[in-house]
Image 1 (spheres, rainbow, N blue to C red):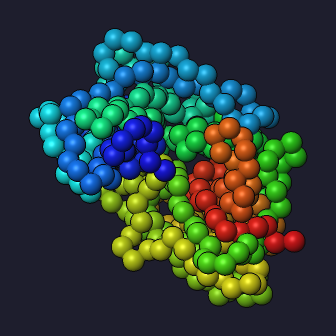
Image 2 (image 1 turned 45 degrees about the vertical axis):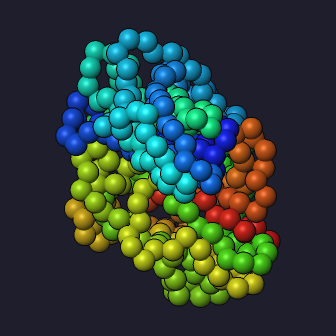
Image 3 (image 1 turned 90 degrees about the vertical axis):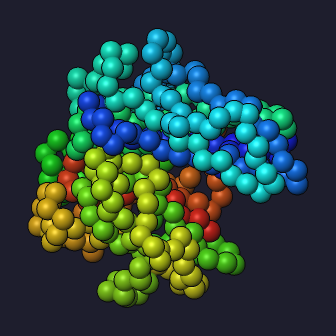
Length: 359
């Protein structure tokens, strides 16, 4: 969705998300967003600015996720990296890349959470661009990790994505299953927005969409996809998560909007029959040597009976998707995966579109 604003110029998205680790300065914690001229004439970009910096704190679980905001003054915690000399001309159809950096050191950073299970420090700001055609804005979100293997909660991820859901215990807790035993993972959580969805069916004409929107897991090149409900051994690959050197994001394994390998798709056509979703988690194989538990197996399925270790572990939770106001988005689901045993359900997070839960 394009950023809000007037005239021909708009940001390519309404938000940009940056992930970084406290005290880690190399490489800089950055993320980019494009400023696009969709008009027929050149425009002059006269200003780029970041303001309204604040810390977001999640409200309690048990209701749809919300966050309170506390402004942060003083030294800015975000900056635009290598901005162009202004004014600059943006021709018709042209893009200007705007790179936002989050500070990972400095006395102005909010204190780190004393309880790692509360997630990361979640920051926000407003990015604005002023042009001859008007001004436009996008929201900046920053995930500031306590250390490189600490992670955001599913609720913090939802705030950054702009979805207002009640996702149960994992909403504001990175370790709700303190036993760390996969057999103790919660099933469908009453009082949350979760629904039973061991299988899905295509809702209408066209393909099913499958978008990887977040990943907070050990590093690795990990495929995912779908399987027919009648043949759980027929695993069809849709995409493969990348592993790219980056100390701020565990090689692109702990971030919102993680990259995919070349050749990956975001759509597939399962036909009219019911299908399930699978993810290769590398828990058993441990090819990438960042930890795992062989008893958990290498694959996670929407169908509990296929999961390891007991054959009835609830590794994938599904929620009818809601927008930032809490309104239902028809035929879309948030699919949240637990690869290990702590129950954070944000190891891999997908949005499925053009689907309904199978009856």
